[in-house]
Length: 218
Image 1 (spheres, rainbow, N blue to C red):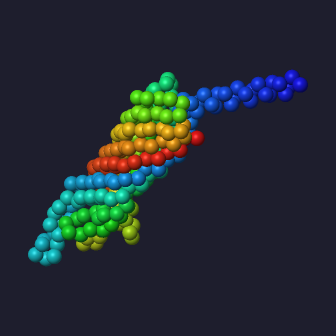
Image 2 (image 1 turned 180 degrees about the vertical axis):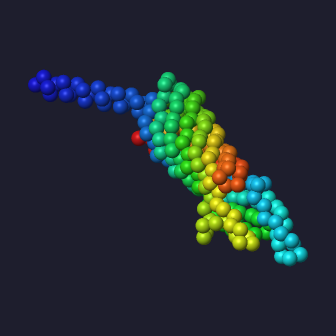
Image 3 (image 1 turned 90 degrees about the vertical axis):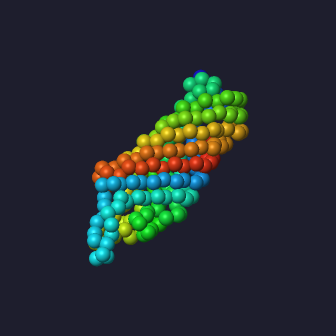
């Protein structure tokens, strides 16, 4: 009898703690971002030279420009340390699809830019109840970016392969958010990342994403 009573008390305590955590907005979440994205890479170290009279290509810097539809998936957790302020940590993986992704003079080829990173955001709520929250967030990210092209390379000019780009990223997250009925989180956000790679001919660049997010809080 005592064992059953003790078990009932423990279960009640656990359920109470879970309910309290729900009311504060703590928990795990799974979400998707969708919107538009634009970015560019520049590389003054990689040039293709030749005699234009003999069909060569003049020396130029290479430039990648991508703009199109952006889609990201995020998974992570968040926890409040008081009624209106908290932190969240999550993994984000996504890509930019559509529009010419690489330009060298008048030559273009379409591709996909993929970014995967770890994120840490500070959240502040202007209004907060048990079932609804409205606030902002600001944070940072660090990860990896790569460009994918059909055939495995961007361009081949004069038997010289223009490689795909891969490099580390560091970024800034900023947006407004609202939580409805405890579990449904909606955001309008921007994510900006800067990237650099010495392994790919010392390329530097940026990527900016602007869009909306829906996340379900478990």
